Image 1 (cartoon, helix red, strand yellow):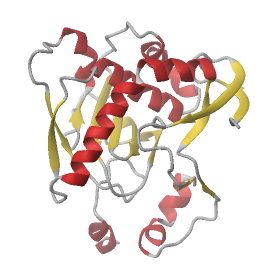
Image 2 (cartoon, helix red, strand yellow; image 1 turned 135 degrees about the horizontal axis):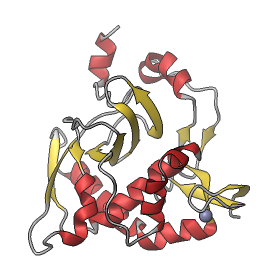
Image 3 (cartoon, helix red, strand yellow; image 1 turned 45 degrees about the vertical axis):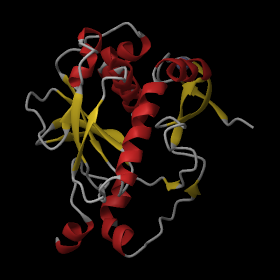
Length: 254
Ligand SMILES: [Zn+2]
C-alpha cells in the first residue's frame, strides 16, 4: 500500500495528498536504506558516541529508503519523468567506479558529456527544496521556478552549486545553515554524492567541485568530452557543513 499524508506540496504549494518522496530518487541506491532520523543537535552533542562507541539513537530505525512526504503525486511524477533519469545514470557510474577501482583514490575523473547536466542540476535543486521547509522557497522563488519550468536555464549568480563523491559516513540532510564563514549554505549527502548549495557568497569553495555551470548545458559543445574531477570525502560528522575529517582525525580531536 502506498503511504500518503495530507500536507502542502513543496513544489506546487497545494494542500493535498502527499506521497512519500524518496530523496534521492529511489532508483539511485535508495530502495533499502535503513536509517535513523535524529536532530542535528542531538547528533552534534553525541557525535563521538554515535561514531565510535556504537551508540544507538533513541529514535526508531526506519526502513524503505530515505525520504519525506514533500510532494504531491503530480509533482513527484513530473520529477520522475523529467529529471531523475540523469541523476540515476550518474549515480550508477559513480558508485561502480568507487566500488571497482582503486579504493584509496581521493578523487576520480569522469566524462559527463552523455548526461543532460541541466536536468541533473534541476534534480539536485529539487532535493534541496524537499530538504527544507516551505520558507526556503519563499526566500528563493527562483529555485522553485527553475524546477517547475523545464525550459528555464539561467539562475541568478547568487546561487552556486558544488558536488563531491561520498561512500562512507553519515547522511547530511540538506537543511540550510547560516554560517560565519560561508554565509547561507545547504549540504546534502547521500552516497555516492554530496551536494552543496551556497547562496550569496562570491567566494568559490575550493574543497568541492563547482557545478553551477551545468545550467549552460544547452550551449555546450556535446561532441567534445566534458570532464569533471570529483573529490571523495567521508562525512562522519553530519554537522557542521563541509567537515570532511576522517574517523581518525575526529578521534584525535577534542
Ligand atoms: Zn505538487
